[in-house]
Amino acid sequence: MSNRSADPTVIAVANQKGGVGKTTTAINLATALAAAGQQVLLIDLDPQGNASTGLGLGRADRRNGTYRLLIDPVDLAAVQRPTFVPNLAIVPADPDLAGAEIELVGETRREFRLRDALRATAGAAMPDVVLIDCPPSLGLLTLNGLVAAASVLVPLQCEFFALEGISQLLHTVDMVRRGFNPLLRLQGIVLTMFDRRNNLSDLVAADARGFFGDQVYETVIPRNIRVSEAPSHGKPVLLYDYRSPGAQAYVKLATEMLRRERAVVATG
Image (cartoon, rainbow, N blue to C red; front, side):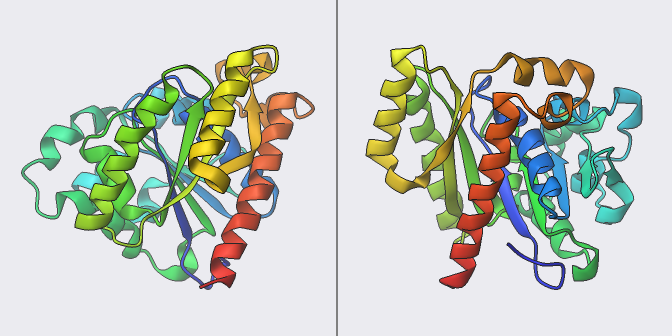
């Protein structure tokens, strides 16, 4: 992937449908990339703040986060903080972020606030990878994430209505590409909550691969109790139970993502 002398790889993790493993994927993919030696910054753009909670930050520890970054704005270094995961920092979702959608409506360059904040930071101070955990909606916060990103990673739950919901998100990606960010691309689709005992998971996976082809990651994230338990302990599953199938799946996902991003760089 990139190194710190180059621009960071900026990836928005987005799906307008809730409960698909979006934040879980953002937390654990960030941790796995950090474990692979990448300097990673996770931006919690979701007012629910679950990515912040999942990395051990209580609400009292979230002052001066993404709200200030979008509204003030301030330097990125002033709002990011280290986590207990080596190589991983976070810009937390501060309590005022819930009101940012309304406040941004009347602001100039309202769609570009996050991109401007990232570009204003000197290259040497930037990480290798920036992951943006977008809210489960298609409002101004998600729009900021998509405009700031080079690509979008879509977690796709292996459930019946999942493929129907993804069409709306891809329509939004096309709109962003036409109006704000012509270089935005689909980084990939990752199948989540895959249950090998359930024929429906196989059917959804087959439909997704049939429609999207190699844009669907080979790695699938299984439905795993350890993945579900980890957030209540304020830890990524890689630190909660590294040997669990869920943790190992995220390690494989990070490896596959690094390989894909290197291929993109190599092809120009």
